[in-house]
Amino acid sequence: MRDLLVAVRESNSFQRSRLGCFIDPNAPLSSLPLTTKSEIAEDQRRNPPFGSNRTYSLPEYTRFSQTSGSTGPPIRWLDTTDSWRALVECWQRIYRVAGIGRNDAVFFAFSFGPFLGFWTAYDAAIAEGALCLPGGGMSSSARVQCIMDARATVLCCTPTYAIRLGETAREHGLDLSESAIRAILVAGEPGGSIPSVRAKIETLWPGARVWDHHGMTEVGPVSCECPVRAGILHVFEDAHLPEILDPETQRPVVPGEAGELVLTTLKRVASPLIRYRTGDLVRSEPQDGPCACGSCELSLVGGILGRVDDMVVVRGVNLYPSAVDRILSEFAAVAEYRVELSRVNAMDEVRLTIEPLPGHGEVNTLRESVATALRNAFQLRIEVSAVEPGSLPRFEMKARRWVRLPDETG
Image 1 (cartoon, one colour):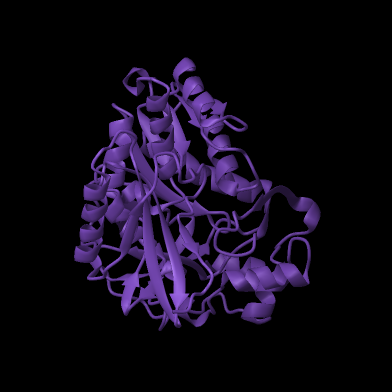
Image 2: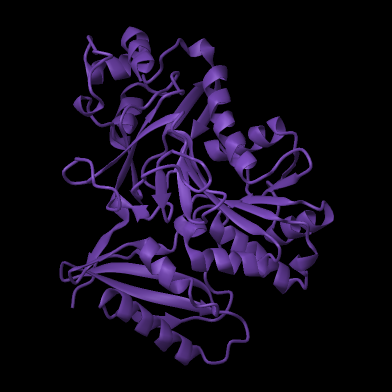
């Protein structure tokens, strides 16, 4: 951390203007200001196209990335060869924990755009000696066929898309028990650490284990799943200095209490973030000693619980998308769902639409069961309707099931 502060004090105009010209490398972390995504976006607006958060001159940078834009305007990011190598090394650790190496064939089920996660995962797989199978520009059915034909042993995608590929295989009469997939690495959504979502994926892909991890373009790969305890993510503390703060008071929470994950990137000196508010809700566990796997790093129970800015208040009840997803994933007959939010007389209202699996006859019973489960979980009555199979959209990247409708009166 001291080395990072010394580096940015010398030549990073963005960090120097935020932290002061005379940063004390021995200052306590809590004395430094938090960094927000809106600050980064505003800096890039004022200093196009890449902003001023660069520690070195522009010719030193060799890699370009951009955020997905799912939580605000897209943010551009530059890396030097050294900082990119540090990111790739974090991804290599994910593969090693999952036991993936030179004897594996890794299928990347996404279209390769500027999102950092695609390219770091791909480069890390090459560095580990695995055979890399890019799945960009393919339909879901073509991807499943390629996975089968190429005898891929590892699948990288979002939890939602792992389910979609499984459904696609079933629709086309392909038996995934005959595939060679033994590991499915998921990220981009909380589902990888939700037991019911994991079980659904592993049922669709017999013989495969789901491995959760998480990261973001701004900070790179952040964590990987414990090899011994499913649903526990260990933060890469050699690359990130983590804090868990109360989103309102910005003070540390006690272990076991949910808070916002705040990260300082220790090895990404070329484009660093200091005390960055990720917006991710997490909960650490008290640690009296090493984890059963031997790790002494920060352990996040249940992975990413949700987003600080995703919460909506419906008739006085705090509602998180990840909590609703946990309920819906318990229903094997629900193929997909959509949540519609609207404001009626200045109050948020929510409606849920479910899509049953083809051939599921008792649609009304299913609809009523879902409504009862939601009411029992949240003490909130949510209107549930059903549509024909195949009616709702499917997602290759992060699922966007929550839709804000125009305000209503009545």
